[in-house]
Every structure is written in C-alpha cells, then in structure tokens.
Amino acid sequence: MVQAGILLSDVPTSTTPAQQFRDILRIVAEAEENGFSYILIGQHFLYGDLRWLQPVPTLARLAAHVAPTTRRPRPR
Image (cartoon, rainbow, N blue to C red; front, top):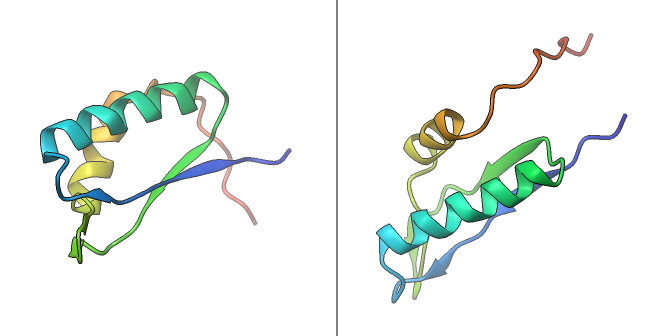
C-alpha cells in the first residue's frame, strides 16, 4: 500500500503566525479526511519575505490535533 503525505510550505511574513497556524490546522484536517498518512515541514524559520513556524513544536502540536490511528508495524 502506498502512503502519501503533504509538505507544509512557507508563507509570506505578512501572514501572522497565529493565522499561519490556523491555516495549517485547516490543511491538516483536510489531509487527514482525504487519507494522507504523514506531514512534513521544513527547517528554515525565516528567509527573505517568507517564514516557517518552528518544526518540532508545530509537529508536536499537530500530533495532538490529529485522530489516533492504528499502530502500523515498523518496516524491516
């Protein structure tokens, strides 16, 4: 079975961090409803006129937001 994920992208610095996170929650909810298996986020926090939220706290918060799933066996 193929598993697909999404890569969360950077946003313009004109978008507030609060709005960026609300948008991420909406994107993650849609991804979950449509069967995506994982979420990726980059590590650049600020460059030019674009911003990422810090990946570890963002992903930790998202882990608490998504529905629990059946534990998958580890690849061998």
